[in-house]
Image 1 (cartoon, rainbow, N blue to C red):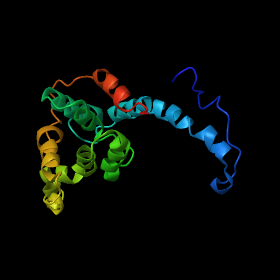
Image 2: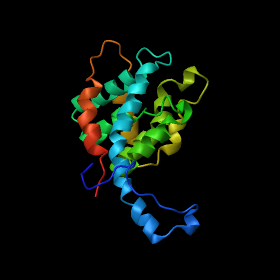
Image 3: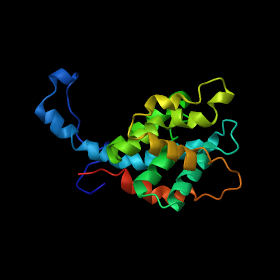
Image 4: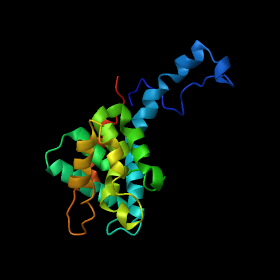
Length: 191
């Protein structure tokens, strides 16, 4: 936040009760606040990642460690920063909405990543199902419905190389602090 940008708490407020009655003057007050709000996103994302530490869901490692292993494996494999960020945040929605968690991660990442990486995060749940859905009575080949997508192979690779293998209690991943600068730089306001 710059000294010239007021915080959300000290900024003037619009006076309308409905959008329909809002004015240009109201929106002149509101529009600059978007950067203020966006500047808070990296800290909110890091906080949400820390919540993943509190839940293991029966898995061999807690959900944060799974995310750290996924990101660390991608980073050590030479993937670019955008891809590593996707690997770190792919399961950020696990504790908020387990059945819809890919959509949460994808929504956070959408403005900051390529269409291919967004699609990968948004669809990784179905692709990850290939490795275990047959054990719980679901169709492990459900991902085949997306075979015609140009992003099928990269998403398949993400799950095979990084996501499905990131439950190793012996693996030494980088700590969250290692990824904090990446989160802060990639999710910062863009103008």
